[in-house]
Each structure stands twice: as structure tokens, then as C-alpha cells.
Image 1: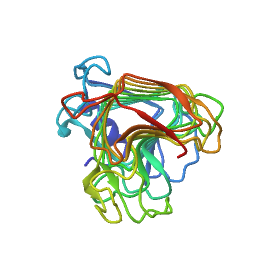
Image 2: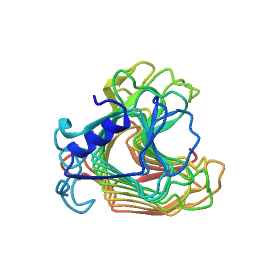
Image 3: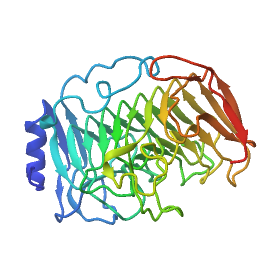
Length: 361
């Protein structure tokens, strides 16, 4: 693994990429977070080095298979597809506060904390480092300054030795996640804007493959002392699009505590997509042309305390018959939406129309 000194970071990026532009290198004490910033920012962890901007260009992207929803994503169409040896290693969290920052081609043992607009994270593998200070994401877009963030062609997962109950794949607002491979995290994606509950979350989750999620017991987050794993959890706002993803609601066989306190193992104890309006009412979302398997339910929505709402459009999705409750779509009876052309899919054939079951959840 490369040294954490700023000069070595520059050398590694230049030697391993066809071209690299690095601006505004400033050295700071070495322990913790790589900070890409234009000004001093407080953070819970001290920084290794400060870069005003990083733009790394490796050459042409891997070919895209097609329009999201026209193919079922898998390992061959998501994540970092070339060999890992071509990635440049970075140990520690990366804090981004400079608008326009681009990170490409890194193997990151830590999190990426986005605090700026127009940030791109591309063709990286992000593993995490065991941070246990509260719920977070391997890519965290919760900060109010995060806007127009793109995470594409990345592989996101926890490591076997450092995995815990606190890490999801990507969380927050104002991000687009496309063609990512996500596994061994507690949830795959989280979409909400807690800083502006009345505004859209502006999240697009498209053409990703989410497979085995890390189940843990005990878990201090829940009264039943176990993780509630969801492929995608929406906690409020509108402006959320879930398009052409392949999500499998199964518990990881390598990361987590296994079947302990899990009555559904190897299925996850949560849902493939769950709408829990803890931040605000959930309105105007689009869930279209996805493949959903496993979990307790395929798509579930509760009203909570935020009032009745029209969820939006849930259409042309395919649901596996392997879910725990055999209920592909379930809603609280105060919620409405447009539901059409949702079908069963047993990996091969459509057997009958999927249904939704109104009721108090």
C-alpha cells in the first residue's frame, strides 16, 4: 500500500493514470482523512493531506450494456470491472469540500464524505474501515452542501474484518448512483434529505446490482436487536427515481453474524425497497423496470406520522417468488400511487401479475 505522504499520493496518481491534474496541494498532520477542500473544515477525524481538486483520467470507460431497465445488471455490468491491481490504494476516509472534485481509480479503505457540489466518484472500490461513530455510508451525501453528486461504476462493500452495523452503501440526497456493485453493507442505498424535508431529495439510483447484505445481531439501532436490511430505504422527500436495478434481498454468507436471531435467514429481515417516512412524507417517486428478489416484501410503504401521500409510479417491475411474505407490493391504506405491469419473475418466466395489499402496516 502506498505511503500516506502527499508527495507519494501525487506520484501514485500520475504513474497509474494516463493523465492527472492536481491543484492546490497543502500538507497537514497525518492521521485519518484525506481532505479535498478549498478551505479549512471541521471534521471528527484529522486529515492526512489537502487537495484543492483532483481530476484523474484513465482513458475510455468500460462499455455500457444499454439503457437502464433493458437488461438485468450483474457483476459483468456493474462495479470496477478491470483487475484490482490497476487501482491506486488509499487508506483512510476522504473528505471532499471542493466543488467539481473527481475521484477515479482508487481502492479506498475508508469512507468518502461529500461536502460539495458537482462531485464525481468513478471506477473506485470502497471498502470501509470499521468506523463506528453512528449510521453512515461508504459514500455519505448527507451534508447540506452535497449536490449533483455522481457515483458510477464503483464496487462498495464492507471488509470481513472491519464490518459492523453502521455502514450502508450510499446514503443522502442529491446524488446519482449508476452501475455500482453493492454488497456486504447493512442497506444498499438510502434516499432522503433531512436538512430540507420540504424539498426533493433529488436521487437517481439506476442500473445497480445489490446482492448479499450484512446482517448483524446484536444491533443497538433496533428494539429487536438485529439489523433490518433493505436494498433501498427511502425515508422522505420526493424526486427519487429507482430505475433498472437488480436487488437481491439475501443475507451475506461471509460478513455479519449469520443466522443468529434471524428467523428468515438466508433472506434479509428487511425489504428489497422500503419507504419509511421518518424525515417527511414520500411523494412523487418512480420505481420502474427493476428486478427484485428475496427479502420479506418486494416493495413496502408505511404512512408513519407524516400524513397520507401519493407515492408516485411503481411500474414494470419484476418480483421473485422467493420473498418471505410472498407480497411483492404492500402499502398502508392511507397511501396511493400508480401501479401497473408489475409481474412475478422466477428468474425465467412471468407467472402472474404482481399485486399490492392495502392495509395498516
